[in-house]
Every structure is written in C-alpha cells, then in structure tokens.
Amino acid sequence: MSRADALGRRTFVTGAAAMALLGTGAQPAGAAGAAGLIGGNLPDFHQALKDELTFPLAWGTSPVRDFRAWRRAARATVEEHLLVGRQDGTPYAPEYTEGPEGDGYRRELVTVSLTRYERVRGVLLTPHGPGPFPAVLLLHDHGAKFDIGKEKLVRPWYDDTRLASAQAWADRHFDGRFVGDELARRGHVVLCLDALGWSDRGPLVYDQQQALASNLYHLGSSPAGLMAREDARAAGFLAGLDRVDARRVAAVGFSMGAYRAWQAAALSDDVAAAASVCWMTGLKEMMVPGNNTLRGQSAYHMLHPGLARYLDIPDVASIAAPKPMLFFHGGQDTLFPADGVRVAYDKLRAVWRSRRAEERLRLKTWPDLGHAFTGRMQDEVFAWLDDVL
Image (cartoon, rainbow, N blue to C red; front, top):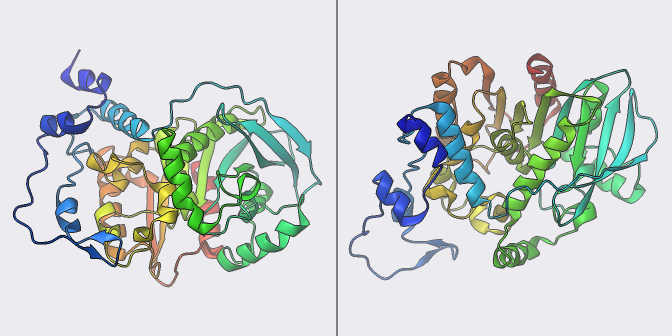
C-alpha cells in the first residue's frame, strides 16, 4: 500500500495530535493587553485566531497527494465535524399524495424518513412523459423567514395561506418565478423538502435559533450537521426513484440553499452536479467586523464546529471536484465581500484545474446584482443544467 493510500484510509486525526502531525500547532500570540470585544460579538484578538487558521488539510497543502485519497480523507473530516451520527440506513418509506396537474408536470406531496428521528414532508414534481428524467434536489434559503420553506421555490397548491407569503418571496428574490415549477416545466423531476425550523417543521423565530443550536449541541448534534445529513439522504431518495435517471441528479440552491447545494455535491455521490447562487466565500474574509455572520443566529445553520482548523469553506466545496459545478455571486451582495469571493473562486479554480476539469467549473460575478436569484441568473442556470445533465 502506498503512503497516499494509507493516508486515505486513516482519514483524519483530530485535535492537538493532528496539528502536531501537520506542523500547524498554535503558537502563543505573545504578550497582550486587556482583552475586549468589538461590537459586542467579536474578540479584539480575532486576527490572532484567524492567523492560526492555515487549513492544513486543503488540497495542495495536505500531505495526501493522490486526489482520490485526499477526497476520502477530506470528506471523512467533514463527516466527523457534522456531529450527527453517520447515516443509519433508515428506510425512506415514502407516502405520496397526488396534487392537481401543473403546466406540463404532475404534483405530489411526499413524506419520507430522512433520518431515524423524524419524517419530513416535501413536494415532488414530475414532467409528463415516459422518463427517466434528469432531476434537481432544490434547496431552500434561510432569509430569516420561517413560515415557508419548500414553498419559497415550489408554488404551494396545498395551502392558500402560505401561497401569499410564497408569492411575495418569489417576487422579492426570484423575479416572481417559482424556480421548482420552472425546472419541472423544462423536464426535470424536482424534490424540495423543509429544513428543520421552516414551514411544516417550524416555524422558528429569529431569536430562537441560538437556543435551538445550543440544545442540539447539548444533545450531541448540530443544526448544520443535521441539515447536511438530511440533504445527502434526500439526494439518495431522489436518485433512487424509478422516474429519475440516477446519473443525472443536480443540487440547486440560492443563499443558504446555495451552501447546501455545494455541500451536498461534496458529501454525496448521488449528486452529479450543483448550482450555487450567492453563497461562497473564504472564511477569513467573511469573519470581519460588520459582516452578517457575526450576528450569530442564522450562522448556526452553516457552522460545523472545529472544521475551520482543517479546511476553508472552498476547500470543502472542492471535495466535489471534478463534478460540474456553478457558482454565481452578486457584485453588490453585502453578505459576501468581494475579496472573500475572489479568494474562494481562486481556490476552486486551482482544484478543478489540477484535475484538468476547469471547463466543468463555472464561476461568475454579476456586477449589477445583489443577493438575489433573478430571472437572468435562473435562465443561465437552466441552460447550464441542460448542458451538464
């Protein structure tokens, strides 16, 4: 067995032992004055903490030089930091409820067991025709709006109360479109489920997010880890449907859904491609005074404690290489500063280039747009999906 293969099997070492092995042990910050807080939520020594983040398991920095072995090791490191136990093979046991016909597709409500803890209701859209079809796991955003989840992306035929809220959300962020319905009209099977706290699984209140996270941490779990596990399981369920071509399943999302999309591509072999709109940055560049992440609350849904000691955000996304991946960023998006997006894009580009697969990676900044998934952006994503699937 080669050294690379051995490292691939022994996937990770945690804590101080890993830092010693990789030569990145934290050094004393030196003499310091009285400690304090910046804006009440960032320690004044935050720069010293950031300086200690060297991301030693990133591709190109890691001692593992075989890419497949590196992917196994990096994925295992992420899996460990999800905190939630590994998938247990709980049967999905789907239950379907037919809905009214859509424009060229049929609608269903589906309830499935994504984990052994809870059954989850979602929507399933299937184009008319014989199939099997390409499919999209559609992942909803955060938006501090919890009364709707799946309804943000698929028109809720089953709930008139939520319809008004959903339409207002589509008008605000998606140029009035329901993205899932558009994808189904264009020939894709679409699955969209609620994350914990949204729609049928909530609703949360913004200020309750910290308490929810704390309670899940006390129970040996985490909001972000649970969401990652559920998204991977949802991809497996979608890929296993007879109506779906299992080789042509993509994950698509906006904002938190974009984070979920590239993460699902990194952690699940059932996801063949991913389109991520408005969620990619370098961690250090995001952790700056004034950034929304520093407020806490919503950050818990995208926080795997301790993972930053090993991998940067784009390093995790790079586990998906060389799959086809699309990343869009709005140049006016204040949630993700331009320098953080630039750092992330450079890292992603280097990984796909190392795989001689740069043509499979699409990176684009829309200079005139903010944090949105406009009709123009959607049309490019739809065309890209047609090409890669």
